[in-house]
Length: 426
Image (cartoon, rainbow, N blue to C red):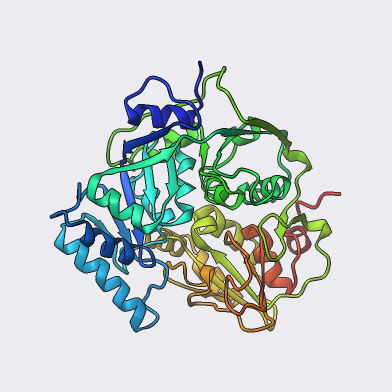
């Protein structure tokens, strides 16, 4: 019987020739990840286990990125716990401010996650790494503690839903629009504990950055993981980055799927997800007149070079609308430096934006852009739950960087063609 790519990766790590959905397995992991919100609790639980040291200091990554640069004493203490733990156990991949980035941008950039891996992280958006053909999923802090001690994690093998994207994408449509449309189609529980396998001719042409965006938001449909079958685009990305050997897996032609969903991308326009769920997506032509107070471009979803370049393209020679705050967050120090060298940061500042060192801050209402009561934000982040970015009576709308940049200029939610005068359809 054929297997999906997810089943093949799990089977290889389990040392089995065959796995079927529903099986319970305990397997070795290639990398475990914690951040400044989740790792301190995991460290506390690790100490309770009583083992002398971690299973492998080369296979643990600790990335303080949520409240850093430290916004207060409590966040500083959280990072101190991580720093001292990393020093005690000689953990190689500890990334302090100045070296750090947003975790799900940083680890692939550094080649710490490679195709064929099994990766767990105490952060729900660990599923991002499926973009390079890895099985990656979020876990709780106690599971992280156990994995740091044993090097293993247990799973129930998920069923797979295959998404086939066909047709030619419209101008300004990116992976963010595809995944918002998809979540709108199936709902926030539409792929609960399933693997979302992204395939089709439209995916074959999709950039690596857009693939990261789509895999990142698989969790917003309730998925266990999101995954792409690695190809030439994947190979180009991982070559020269990978710090160890890797293996490309694919899905067998006779693999069994829970469901196959076909989507014509030519029918998808730039999307906006309305409060208070990512499933509340609408095409830009259906948005209406919605003024905004703040725009955030960045996060583990859309803080990569493709995102920064498209934002700069729209903002060049233009100004952020009066009364609108635009915050731009490159995903890593490397991306920040590249944005400087390409002149993008100068464009952003000239337009009236604030550009920050990498942080998750505003995405979770932590710092660097918290919303007051009654304020409305448009963000390239991944969640728009009640109170996600600040006051529970604020509102968050989700979009691509193209829509976000255009909206910052206009002071209300608009499509990019309304600002730059190209790419308009219909």
